Length: 384
Image (cartoon, rainbow, N blue to C red; front, top):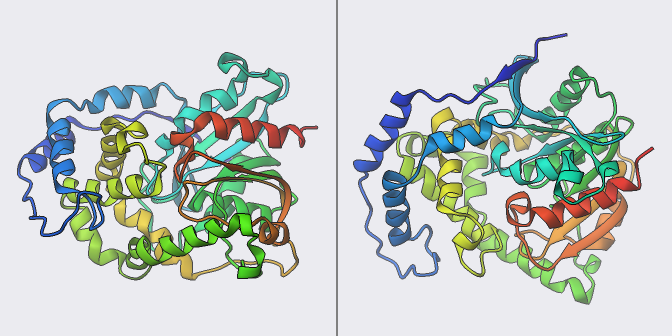
């Protein structure tokens, strides 16, 4: 058995000083667009305001202490460094559960759901719903770095997670995720259905046929298809860049903390349910900490590698449903991609379906209680 070592976040002060120096020397662009609603991208006035706060009020060490309040570990599997939180459950029979973040997230986006899932009684729940929560950083994200030239994608990550969970003593386990994390969870339910208790997803992304068709959408779901089509037309430019030329844009991302922050913050505003304002969902500290985790670990380009390597696939059977493990789905109407139930019933071994009125792409941060309640309800039916 390979070593699993305790880990603490401890960024050298020189790295924090360098960020401040670069922020002070930002070469600001003009804004030759009408951009009050961020229609041309990250708003200049807001980015100036955010950087002013970053320099005057933001305290990385406070967030570092908060991270270190969680039990963190590192190990290496197949040459890939893996960082993860492992929070043991408090209850009569905790279920092992690996929760998966996406891009442009980090493991820290999962912090609001770790406590309620692992210790329900402390958060007004039933101890019988407790989970042993494993919250890894995806390979190439934050402290799961550096990675090499081998493919890093949802299917390679699923293979790693089976080995990680076995290393932690879990031969069978549950999984949950959104964005790339939903693809990891779906792949686990596809390739390792015998090892997966169940998969809970809050984004549905098909990686093979059958794919959604117009006839799959009911009249009530028509807005789902429209929202998805609008996102693919107006909001998917980042995806095409990261799938085709991530190395080119990485020079800017790794040289300017403001450039990196703008790339990430714009996605939070556009993909989250921010109808009442960006900072009603994500505080300035939230936004800056995400940027800092990418910056301080130098992982923008290795996180984008998950998009570039999406050209590889690993489908092990052609049976329907594609995902044979029991699957629970919670879609949020504020998310960028929404799928019809009729298709989901073909693609997944669907056991639970729910659609939330409020909430968007970053559910663990935006609507943690709604997400936790649905996870508990789904897995309650699968407990021995």
